[in-house]
Length: 516
Image (tube, rainbow, N blue to C red; front, side, top):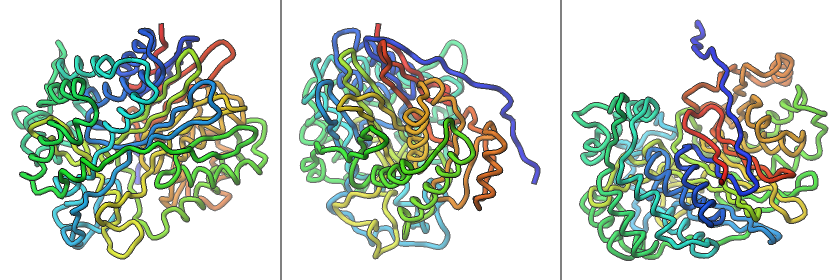
């Protein structure tokens, strides 16, 4: 088979540096909003929440009000971080028999056995209870400095303007038009005249239904309106009309949780991660074994062989009994923020698949998640579909601390590829002393349980040879302009004279912005 590789350029990004704080996310416009919040007197929590809501409007395929996730907050002067858990929960009325297996297997993210009509992957039966609004709102209420309405104001302005259609947003919509066209409101918004919007000059903007009005109501009535007020009533009315299992009781009883982090000792640092049904415990296993190894003075053959060996073994254990995962896109966003006091925040928010369930709720403009797709559709497994359950997820936001002071925040989007990317960025930074620019630009591998190792062709040929000699099947895959192959991380580090941050180098929208 003749290899088709059209990547023939070198992509680089300049980090952002400032003593007043930095925000890095998957969209530079959202990062700018967060940096503006810092400049206006907000802290890193205010900035992170403002950025997350901005991403919900300008990157709607990746996250939003209908999503879920995790946040770590390590406040300056405190010895440890706190975790805000706002992960997905299946509805109380979930009926596993509504997801009968049929022949074949799905090809979107998870290679689960196929379910009738793809009900677990898209449409109203794929909704899990969304936690993003409660989680982000709880963090801002507990640790933010600014008024809730002021934090949401920039995102409302973005929603009023509409989604800008450039080449990248046009491409993403076109790639997922088959799913979006299934549902009337989604089709009306994203496929005007039945076709994906095309980038051009002057730039056009598309309105995302009633999303701006929903965010205005949220800003005025508070976060719990999404779960117990007017917004909740609109959500439930739409869900009932569509035949979703999601009901009023699911929203009313949903509460984001504040947890202690999973603390992982690593070469004089404490890596703080999300406990429980995330990638945090798997990261802990790998780091625990990695710190006993001699990785060399710089990333070399034995370094990447150690990464590949440990990741392969960890994923074999993690995925025992679970379905395999394809290399499809994932619909997650990650952002990091730091303020002048040194408080660091790391947030991962997701709809799971690109555009989640592909369902925009007509009354609110909310794109709903397809969190039921995290569950194994086969009965009798620990992660099988069931009522009022939390599924195993791949999210892995982390904050590294030394002597109780946060010094690094990172995380990524990219499904099962997230944790290998986070592991390597941590190792590049902490084992080899790389700054954000060098760490973000260094080529990586991915070994996330697919039975092979993907390796960036820019890696030294000796590394590739060593991986193969160690028994790994290695595919050389470029990290291309449509980033998917090695996850999409954001990274912030503490430096002697302030802070530095960088967005994913391969993502055309991603950027870090310094506070003025």
